[in-house]
Amino acid sequence: MISFATMARQAAALLLLGALGACGSGAPSARSTADLTHPFLGPDQSSWLIGPVAQIATQEEIDAYLALRDEAEATLFIEQFWARRDPNPDVPGNPVRETFDARSAEADRMYSEAGFRGRRTARGTIFVVYGPPSGMDFEVSSAPGSPPIEVWEYKATAPLGLDGRKPSSLYRFIKRGDLTVQYVPRDPVPLQRPE
Image (cartoon, rainbow, N blue to C red; front, side):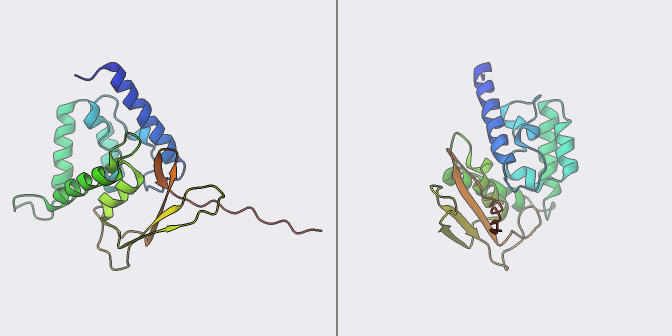
């Protein structure tokens, strides 16, 4: 049984992640982490949409999941969600869900930080949806004193992701406090010409 204090800490952490995500996460969903958290479900199912699932799901699926009212409906919804993505339902197993689960486990191992499972971090979400990048490098940040920017490259020949789309050619990440977030460069301040 999870205590109220534990649930309150988890909710506060999810709100913090949502605030960080709202600062340039680059995720296609217009909803924040707080908006994707289902308050009427238990801890695992309440946060099911956070991370890669929000990128894979349609807006209609997100709205339908958030309208559910109990654990049994959520369990059935999740099974139907993966069944819709099974490329060959007549064959045992679902390669899309198996890929998702394997990449999620690997993302949890590689990218967990600041108390968040790796699959729910910026790098973990991209890793789960598109697989490992074809190349990784680091760039010097343009802001003095900022940490280096981690750059992931996906080749034009990269396969479609679990969301049915090609990955962008580059993803950039930067450490902000204890959490690595997607880096979105700010427009430089235009130089003023002396008059």
